[in-house]
Length: 231
Image (tube, rainbow, N blue to C red; front, top):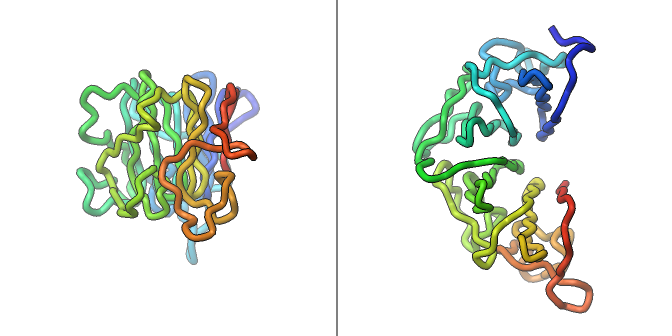
């Protein structure tokens, strides 16, 4: 059981759940598990006939050392040994189907030549970053949050995101928008901009494909980014 003796090294928050990685590499979760997105095969489910899991509960990672976690509403993604894993709601039409409700970790397909070091999730889309600074997105692009001007739902088709062929250093995903910082100190944004989340609001089209962020004079915004965060 959870106790004060568990020293937390990392915390990850999603719309309806929270994960903790402890110094002993154990993973704990709390929140909604109605689609098995906590990686728990048993436990109460949020909904009419159940309560959300309110006490941190240990997650069976099947011996995998989890180094990063991305939380969507109904799915959770993990990085372990530079590979991408997922658990939660089925991705119908994808290359694999996550085992809804059973809380079973599954490795995503088509990861050849990809060495992932971090994962970043919004409400329905997720971006993995490789050790070489390349970005690969999966999930929903209905508001251009994966950088494309078209708005399909990609499910588990990997989409490479290339901000002017630059190397990404940091990524942050909001509900429907994404920010990317690159090695040349440029800052890029994509996705929903209806409330000026990406700076320069376009009244005629709130969906912004991958675009370099401008300053108040319309020049490319150049800054050494120490950290990124999106709400």
